[in-house]
Image 1 (tube, chains in turn purple, cyan, orange, brown):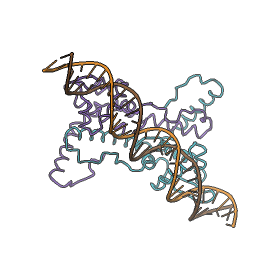
Image 2: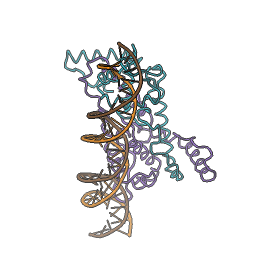
Image 3: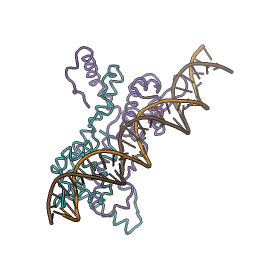
Image 4: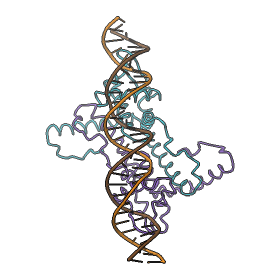
Length: 160
Length: 160
DNA sequence: TAATACTTGACTATTTTAGTTGGTTATGGC
DNA sequence: GCCATAACCAACTAAAATAGTCAAGTATTA
């Protein structure tokens, strides 16, 4: 399980998809425009998301992508794993050297942590993230209002 | 906050350090041998860990590295951030484009998630990981025993 | 003072990231 | 039956990160 900008792009795009799924499929071009991600890069990501059956595609005019399942049934971890390919396998599948004492211990400790992280990401669904939309929406509008009017009086407040 | 093999190396090395800190400093050469990480690469990682004041170094014969604080006071997140440098800044500090509706929303949603992950990693200390040592120790010995004796009867049991 | 072990800096091969280019299919509307 | 739309596909690429290597130091202790 990696956690890089690639996963961020994937999650961001899926969130955009969930937000704008009101009437029919959403085109990648629209996501690209809204989220500032290159169209061709999005195509690569959505090829993987489609293969993992997280989205379905509709070709032709009026086509685009839709979520396969309700946003509440799609875990953030699913998206990250889908776009990053190769679920685990991150360098630790050589069990041969695991006979010596210390090596084995820290290997297992890392795996334990790694599992915790994965469990955590699998426990958060896209839908849950979207439910906090209202709060964040207000926060965002306030912020952009202040930026227009004032001179960014307080900075570092939303540094997530 | 990234989560790559670099962070894994850092955490693994710190765990090794905590485990073998019984009598005086631990040399990087010993960690390199036990964990199968290149010495020079470890040097780079520990330069950063030292600058973040997670470890102290002692030069000369009998020297090496020691933890600055008890293992319970060092969060996994601290280690990952230390070796990966640049705490956040992952592409999302352009607040300029955040005036439009959708862009802002998913930005904030991602930041929310990103914060959750960071909080989670900061809530786990090296000490807590080590406390599960006993359980894992047994599991490991059992596993290696089986590998010696049998023919890996059940595989995929500890695929963390 | 010689061996040990940390310290620093420069260099490098490989892989990943974040695209670009240039097409090809499929489809709905006119 | 065109034709614009939009998904699909494959190959290529510049830049960055990863995971090191190599070579020279410097501090410390026996």
